[in-house]
Amino acid sequence: MNNRLKVLRAMRNWSQADLAARLDVSRQSVNAIETGKYDPSLPLAFRIADLFELPIEEIFQRDG
Amino acid sequence: MLCNHPNPATRRYTLRLLVLMSAYVGLLIFSKWMFRQGLGQGVLAYVLALLPAVPIIGVVWAVMRLLVEQTDEYLRMLLVRQTLFATGFALVVTSVREWLQNFDLIAPGDGGFGATFFWFAGLGLGGAINAVLERRAGNAE
Figure 1 (cartoon, rainbow over the protein chains, first blue to last red):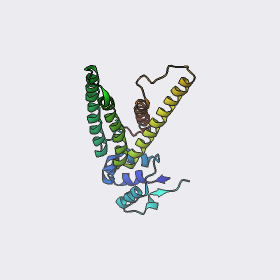
Figure 2: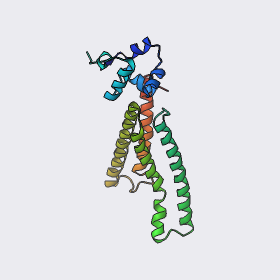
Figure 3: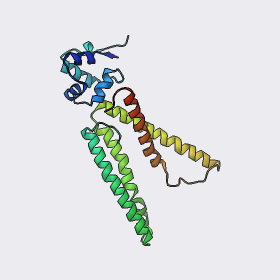
Figure 4: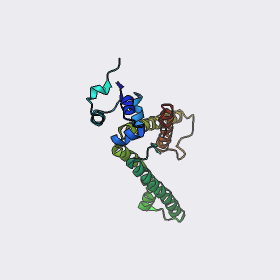
């Protein structure tokens, strides 16, 4: 799964640590999601979508 | 340490580990002392022999509690991978030893290094593997 987390975060001038604090997860989690190493659960994906005030499909896309 | 992120669940685990390992040392010294004094007789001998095992079982409990209490799903995934590695490692080592013993290629017994010892060793190795993989991914804390 691809995601635009890094771009959306950069647009807000947030560091990984800032985003992690806002999502109440570790910075490791944010890094792992951004780099595509880990796909978040649906509840966490919804939290991310709520934070950026975007539909999930505008943040996460299928591979290819 | 199982994970290098000091969130509340990890802090609770670390505290539990410190208490349990201190209890282990204390109970081991106490049990050995009681046996040396000739007080390890009858039912009490069984109680004294099992006392040091209680905090060891407690450590297994603490690891399982960490799995339950870890709210960060990525860190929980790393811990699951670490405990699965530890379980596989302990099973492989003890199976190899058992079959070498079955054909009398090595001496019977475990020399004090039972399955739990290898599970803990596997936890350490699994944690090291996680740390290396995290560092490679640029995820070191």
